Image (cartoon, rainbow, N blue to C red; front, side):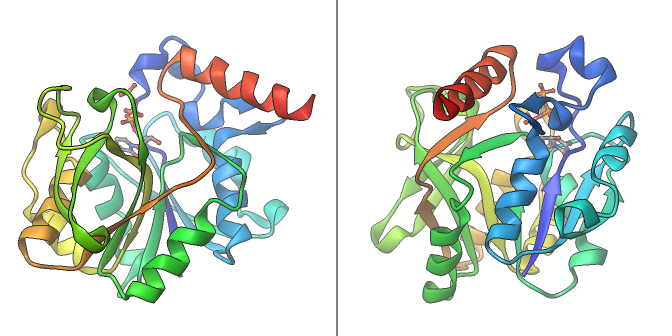
Length: 243
Ligand code: UTP
């Protein structure tokens, strides 16, 4: 299986730092956030990894290079217009081809690094068309929220709903396994929340097309580093572990 890491976002919530440093390169402990994602992919045998970059993201190439230092093979694609996660994933189509692939967001910190093992095994065992990593969340307005059905089926998915409109407390954790049919769904996706092409809306199209779209709970600690507060939390967590 190949890996895809979207890392082209503007990171506006982390201005002014992200005017100079891509948020995926902010250091947690002794490594950039994105290197933890690469380590976790390597841990489950995924060494063919594509990173989606864009304007002001050259430093990501400088930091990761070919991937040799980390024992993986990294290629890059460019998302010209920063118009949403669906388009970031879609920009990897020509490299991914027809194979199933794993997407992990480049600004998400997970611990321990074995967190991908269960979801991959689950996906294979269930022979799903797509499996979405979820966890119980407190604030639905920061996540895609799923409506769970029986046998881990996802019946619906809504991007960042209000607390009132959230169909559950299970939020997407930035981990997705797709087959290549997601690319057709992305092409059909219309701009949604914040006028961006949302990956949750592409997943909704898979559900409407009666594809087997399942969820699997991600265990361990997950911090989506979107704000300075999250960033401090991730560093504090790691310091505590080391102590
Ligand atoms: P976010 O939803 O945190 O968006 O992206 P953002 O643009 O980076 O940050 P804000 O909202 O402006 O503060 C989650 C992940 O998806 C990538 C980001 O780089 C990040 O790793 N992403 C997002 C893309 O690759 N392309 C996009 O168009 C949007």
